Amino acid sequence: MTLTEKIMSLRRSRGCVSNLSSLDFVDKVTEFYMSDGAVAAAYDDHGVKRIVFCAAAPSELPEMLSRFAGREFVAEIVARDPEENRALLESCGFEVLAELRRLSTPDCTGLPEQITQYFDASVGYFPKTSEAREMNQFLWETFDTRVSRLLSDEEVSKVIEKKEITLHRDSDGNIDALLQVVMQPRKFYINQIINRGERKTIHAMLQNRLREYVSGGGRYAYAWVETGNAASNKFHGKYGFRHDGLYNIVYTKRA
Image 1 (cartoon, rainbow, N blue to C red):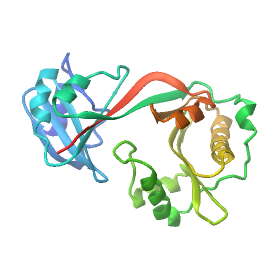
Image 2 (cartoon, rainbow, N blue to C red):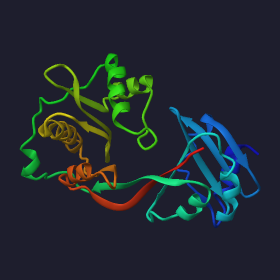
Image 3 (spheres, rainbow, N blue to C red):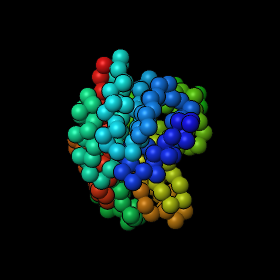
């Protein structure tokens, strides 16, 4: 039985325990273990070893997860209860690295004057692929790749081609603000925000992309924000984003 077939079989179990959201990882698996009632696999994500698992029952997992050793591993649980499977993972040697909440708004139109005063259509630009390496270095210097899923320079070039990233440079030509969004007809996802310049800069950049989205009939928008990041939570709150009940708990297991 292949890894995919095993996962599909286990997911049909009534008491299934899993942190899988898709099967996109299968081609990147570097290590996996299977038993009659469980499967656990690790794959490389730009230097981070991420673990995914699926079991017919919680009791099937400890033996599988205990096999991963020799380096640091990361696992994520997306759920409405931040305590879901926490005791189980902690018993297997994992500890919480970060807690993120999904912040969303059903309607991103009608923004308050408090922030629309910063609107400026001239702020920000779509970078060229030749800027990918510099821009990616900016991202890697800012975020913990175990929590934020960062990309290679080549992958960033593809993101640039899709116009998902807006940049701003200071008077010396250095990047001081970056906004990455994934825009679909009915969904606006704020993936990454960095602002090292004036407050008005990132507000203008976001509002430019939101206006583009809303002009096509879009309303719903969301972002994942670390619970303890007061500045980011406050920023998103100004746009009407509120916690919608979903959590992403990131766990780490060190060698």
